[in-house]
Image (cartoon, rainbow, N blue to C red; front, top):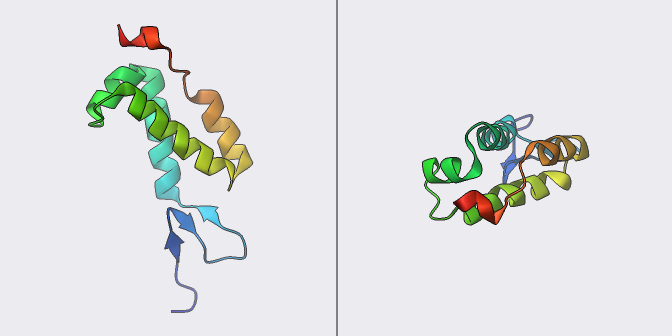
Length: 90
């Protein structure tokens, strides 16, 4: 009904400008924080990804999605998410 929350692809679209939902922001923040604390390889395994490269690409894609909605959050996440290096696999 009127005034209810409308969410599409993790975006709140109930106002004149789309916003990221708190659930989406917390999810990305959790993945970024865990990657810094435990390493991309460990987090990828914990999250059920078959490959750390796939996990890195997934989180990078989420961060790129944020760029189109909220530049400040994008800059925060992209500055915190570690770069993936192939020597991390050993």
